[in-house]
Amino acid sequence: MDEILQALNDAKVDYLLIGGMNFLLRHLPELTFDVDIWVRDDAANLEQLNCALRRLGAEWGRTEAEWRPVPDDWRWLQGQGLFCLTTRHGALDVFRDVRGLEGRFAECRARGLSSTTGTGVRFIGLCDEDMLACQEALPPAERKIRRMEILREAIRRAKTT
Image (cartoon, rainbow, N blue to C red; front, side, top):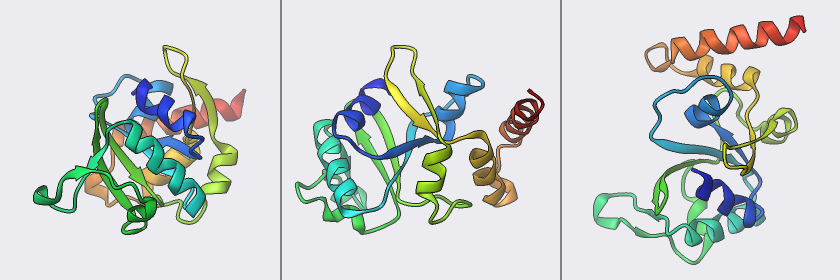
């Protein structure tokens, strides 16, 4: 994970760490198999993201037969809203928008929480209120109930301090 976040930082990608890894780093160890990021969705940032992906040896394809290293030209990133990639350092899911927070990247980034990994790599993660909003926007069968309970408790505690 650190190598992925460092590559994004080095390429000056504007992103938020979301999903299980963000939850794990701030609240509770939880099994997760990938790094999930939400990126600012504009041409300049997608170009920087593509540079980071290439440095990470990222691969992607619409089908298994199309799976290959990501292209030099960043415009392939405009083709859909979510990309599930592999890198030399693990799986990476890139979201151009996030359910429950649609169109509010800048607002969520402003509320994001700056932190570091255990080895000191800096990142900004989605705040608890926004993580909860994402969970609440999922179909009931996909919600992580325990995560939602922990987030609600953290939000409640933060309001009383």
